[in-house]
Length: 468
Image (tube, rainbow, N blue to C red; front, top):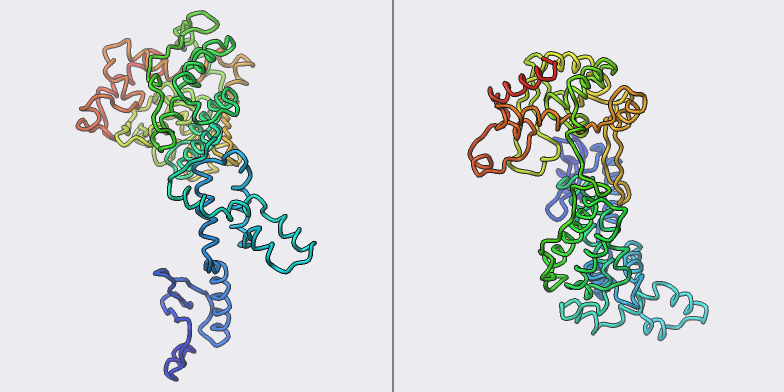
């Protein structure tokens, strides 16, 4: 008879319960069950008790008889939401340190009336000085925590950090892509430099106008860059209003702020010159190896970007059927984003077969060490992005293997050729763009199905480029 059963028959009460199905001890805590993997013996029970004591010490909240810890937690929450007023800079860091160390923050009055030597009193006064002063001001904090008062001077830069923290949380929750966060950090950096130490109260119609005038006066920036910087500022301002930090957004925020985006160095760009010709494609495919050929063909055959190629999974490639069933990485957050069933040219099938990674069971393309071809992630609140395809494309341009044209123009070349033909209505599906019409959004379901007209458009594209 097992040890736990023996104790039961003896009528001995024990603190833990033996769980036969998992062969371990268990304890129910606040509706959850904690398991301890030790044998059903007297010694095993003692080991489980020790593990239970250690678990309680780690997880149970420290005693808080005077509510001091709870107040600190609410103070920290208030500072994170509202920023640190002038004269209270650094208090949040001290409060957070006190909470993590479980050390009680003593007020000046408490230290004053305790019996300490001069050295002990000075030592205690030196610990958490800002937090100690604030925690002693009960009336002020009661008023703040009831929502009756806000800091008299809140820096705009504090709120930029709050906004970026909210976007970072979305990245960690897989709601937004890391690149979106990285772009916002970059674009709002320009606004931070512009506003300096200005407070939230300065965010009015005049500031909107001044920032716009500042941007359009920067000669070294392209019109597209200026527009992106201003849109990031608009996004921040709308967020401040929606979160209740700003009582009302400036009335001119939605005005028609114009940026000349189609000019570069004052000249209109001729993008048609950057499209790939039939001769370009023939020359590129003759000079590249298997993986390079596969990437180029996917850019044309399926309108893939670097990110799409790097994310392509083996489960999405059906070589025996000559098809790829795929939804673009860019549309992952969109509910009605289409899943496209692409017909592959024979040349694309052969190139994919030759380039399939043997180092990964999941991804079709990887580096020789088995890593993805493109990495985009946030490390210590900083966006890091690396693309082997972009790096190789630049190397091939310098060596003359490919023309001085961007990789993304392969996708645009395919869309242009289809758009200039009788198959123009199928450009949107070829590009795997999110439907814009009511029918496309809610009624006309094409996800994953073979679309004969799209197949014909892809066959036509291949013939125009000499690939099918």
